[in-house]
Amino acid sequence: MRGQPAPVGSTRPELVRALGRVADPAPDPRLCGLLGLPAPPPADVHTQVFVIESHPFASVHLGSEGMLGGEAADRVAGFWRTLGLDPPPDADRLGPLLDLYARLGDEELGAVGRQRHAVASARAALFWEHLASWLPAYLGGVTRVGDHFYRAWAGLMVEVLAAEAATMPERGHLPSALVLAPPPSDAGTRPRLLDSLLVPVRSGVVVTRADLARAGRELDLGVRLGERRYTLSALLDQDARPVLRWLGRLAARWARLHQDLHPGGLAPVGQWWAARARHTAAVLTAASATAPPGAPPGAPPGAPARVPC
Image (tube, rainbow, N blue to C red; front, side):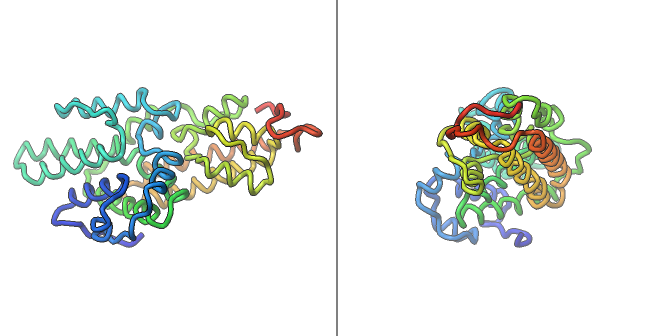
C-alpha cells in the first residue's frame, strides 16, 4: 500500500469515478497518468482480466451459484430502485456501482441538513452492502491474473476503499449478503465440492482458469481447456490427491490475502472472507488425505475418478 491516495480532482467522488473509468476497455492514458498508474495495456489484456479470468459483478462473488444474476443481482437492483432510479441491465457490475457511488458523493457535497444526512446514509449503505462486501475479493483475483497495470489499479482501489471505510459510521454488523450467505465449502461428494469451491462466497476463494492451468503445470497433469468446472473435474480425474492438496494451499493463501485486501475499517469483512477460505483449506486437506493416490493404471486424462469427492 502506498498510503492515502491523492484525488484526481478536488473531491473524492472524482477519484472513485476515475477508477471506474480506468476499469473500462481502452482507458484514457492521461487519466491513468493522473492516477499515478502506468500506461494502459492493449484491449486484449483487459478482456483476459475482466472477461475471461475475473468477473467484476457482485452476483458472481456473492451469489449462491457464483454466476451472473440471481438473488444477489436482484438485491443490487433493488437498491437502485430505493433511490428512485431505474437499474441498468448490469446494475451489479463494478463500473455502474462506482459511478453511482460517485454520484451520491457529489450529491452529498452539495446537500445540507436532513437531505445531506439522507444522501450520506444511502452512500454508506451502497458502500457496505454492495461494494465492500465483495470488491476486495474481486480485486484479489485481479492481482493474481492481471498485468502490472491492473495490479497497480487493484492496489489503488484497495487504498481508496480503506480510505472510504474510514469516513463511514462504525458498523455493528456485516453486510447482509455475508450474513445470509450459503453454507461454506463441502467435500461430501465431488458435485458438492465443485459446486462450493467455485462459488467465492462459499469458498472464500476466487478460483480462476489461470489457477487451474498453473495447477496442471506444477503437478504435471494434462489441462483440458473449457469452463472451470470441466477443467477442475478433469484434473481430479487424473490424480485427485495432489490436486486437492494444491487447492488447499491455494485456499490458505487466499485466507492470508484477505488480510491485505481488507485493511483498516474493512477488517471485519476480511475476517469473514478469511474464515471461509480457512474452512475451505481444511476441507480440501482432509479430502486429500482420504483420496487414493494416482490415477487408474493406464488411464488417460479425464478417465473416471477413483475418489469419492
